[in-house]
Length: 262
Ligand code: DGL
Image (cartoon, rainbow, N blue to C red):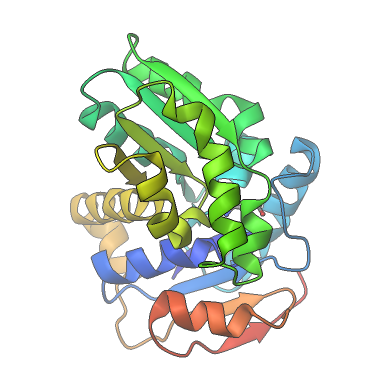
């Protein structure tokens, strides 16, 4: 199985994209809703949660781990890759690769949680790929709670998005990375407020395409994971009221969420 984790429902945007681009590969998903949001926690705490999540997914039979959370990736990617022998991929590198490929003026914006933005990892990785590029980052700490609450189309959400994007609008960016897996759910709100000509990079799609490339190239891994007869499973460590509706909205079908301790 392909193990995927996030602090909550955001990583389901990644799971959904993996279902679309890699059909026939069963998933085991963990949304750590008991501890969400990760983005306002310290790197040490996020790293600890990420190790627990990975252990849980491996116990469920995951053979590869997708860190479907930018906050976890920015705090714990290196530590997880050192500790586990399984392949661990994260959402940051594929989004960076895509942004570096599409920018025309080398001015790239990144929005994410405080943990992700403070880590500086997007900036480092972008500049490693494209030295000339200028990166403008903006932490948007209120957006994850708004998404988890299901406030996707509310007037208040639109106002907050506008306020967060305002500093980036002056920077003439031509590319904006949604550096949080919750933000694809706000794409319709973000796009008109950053400007229609700005390329929006959705890390959930990019990581799914990256995974597809890996599976197409590594036949042993492909054969070990391909099992269309096995159903995917979706675990959460808590079940707040809006979660079922949100999961249904992301997948376009009802999703059975199993509650677990991590
Ligand atoms: N989806 C997570 C991310 O990509 C949000 C983290 C959170 O703050 O819980 O960063």
